[in-house]
Length: 287
View (cartoon, helix red, strand yellow):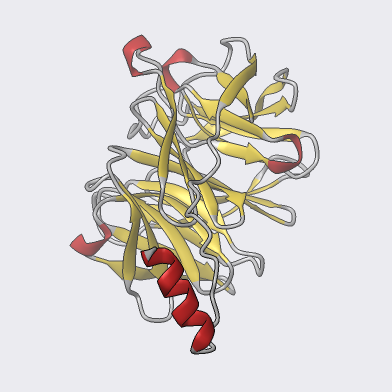
């Protein structure tokens, strides 16, 4: 009777009734293992897709902060075959990579190295500012501006129009590792000290936490439509929806398998995970 009365009153007063749609949760995502490489890789820290059929892999091959020159870059096909193990070498614990036109940008502990992808030769380097640098991840926006995180010194570098500078520094960065350019005015940052995925407005230098509780945040890659995959170096991978909903997808900590700087090949729905100490890449189909 009460519902009927309210409906009648609404109709008499000319009110418009609106049917409210129930809130829906983001669609669950799962990973299905497709392939893994052999174990000839040496401490693979990051993987980067070239947009064609090649995955570049940064191999530390030693301690993560050793100036030993034993680090190298490999080329792996999209079906998991190591096509060129030592494509280029002589690097110091290479980690993050970014690609723009004919240059592959790679972090080299205290410097950023630009490698010509046609011949594998280093063309130019840029040194970090100050002591104790630990340059980690790299991202390049669509205009060719390069951003680099320094996990130990709490710094964020920018290379724009061949000008190398400290864009930001300080405790507010919370030991940044993963970095991803989104458009011209925003970066996604993985702050390892607080285990969070955050956005950085490049105009105002303000940061907003999107999701937390991810421990040692490492790789950040876009799925599309504002969604991201984020890895925790300890061995976890998460899916972060545009509204900040966090869904765990992979947990290999019990097997002591790391999940370092990941890559996502959208056209294949393929998520590639470098396993660090296990010396291989593992690929998963995203379903």
